[in-house]
Image 1 (cartoon, rainbow, N blue to C red):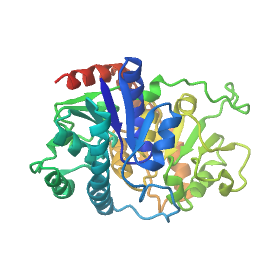
Image 2 (cartoon, helix red, strand yellow):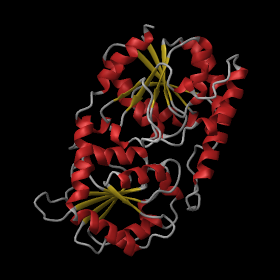
Image 3 (cartoon, rainbow, N blue to C red):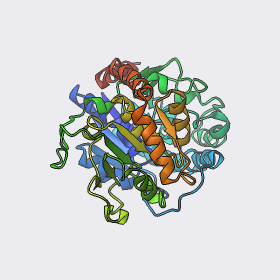
Image 4 (cartoon, rainbow, N blue to C red):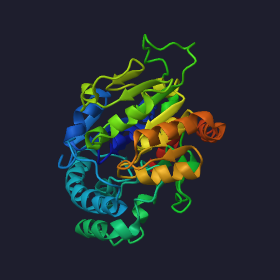
Length: 383
C-alpha cells in the first residue's frame, strides 16, 4: 500500500504523523510526506521521502511580540490561514502529487484541509490525525465557509458539518480523558498510545545530573516555534524558579540562542533541544506553553505542569488540564516570577497533582501502539 502523510504546519503538525509512518514502513508499505517546502529538509532528515506543497508564507519562524490571549483571533487565524489560504495552495499542489505518486490512502493531520478535499475529489480514502489535544478549535461555524468554497472549486458538495474530517478514520495519539467532553471525537476515532512512550529514555546523559541528589528536576520549554514569540516570558519563568532548591533544564528550540537568557545560576541548564523522553523520564515538573505535544508528553510520564499558554490551542489545553487536576495555568502577560514560584511549589508539594497526572499516564500506557494504527489504515485502504 502507498500511504501519503500530509501536514500543514511546522514540527507540531509533523511529529504526530512520524510514528505512524515509521510503523507503516516497517510493515512494508511505501510512505512519503507532503508538507510545506520549509519543512521538506526536516522530513528528509528523518529518513522519509518528502515533497513540498503550498507556500511557506507565515510558517518560517520570525520574531513577534508576546500578545494577550485572544481566542477569537486564534479562530480567525485558523479560518483565514489554514482553512482558506493554506488549504487552497496545498490542494492544488497535492492534487498534482497524487496524480503522479498515486497513493492508496492519505493520512492528514487535522488542520491540513486541502489534501482532505483532494482525497475526496479523487475518491481516495483518508485518515485524520488529531494534533489539537483538548479540541475546540476545529469547529464548523469557524471553518465551513472557506472549506465549502474550496470543495466547490473541486466539484464537491457543501459539507457544513465538516464530515470530511471524520468520514473514514480518525487517529488520536492522546489519552481519551484529555479531550474536552464538549468536543467529543467521532465514532470513527481510535486512541493510540503517545509515541513519546516508545522513545529511548537514555539519549540525554548530562554530566551534571546526579541521580542520587535529593533535588527535583524541572523542565521548562516553550516548544519549537513559540520561543520567538514569548517576549520576556522565559526570563520571568526562570526568575521565579532559579532560587528554589531545584535543578532546571530549559530548551529554547533551534531558532533561539540560549545566550539570550543571560547568565543564570549553576542550577539552570540551557539547551536548544533534548528528546522529550529523556528529560520527561527524569523530571518532576514541566513548565510549558501548553502545546499539545508538550502536554501529552508530560502526561504520558505522569508529570504535573505549570502551563503559561500563549496562543493556538494552548489556552484550551491549559483549561482542560486544570479541570483534570494535573496543572495550574498562569497568564503569559501578567504572570510574575512570584506567581511562577508559587505555582511550582504547589505542584511539587501537593501529591494530588502527581496522582492525577499518573492516572493519565496509566491511561496512555493502556492504549495500543502505532502498529495498531497501521492495521486500521490497511482496513481503510482496502475499502
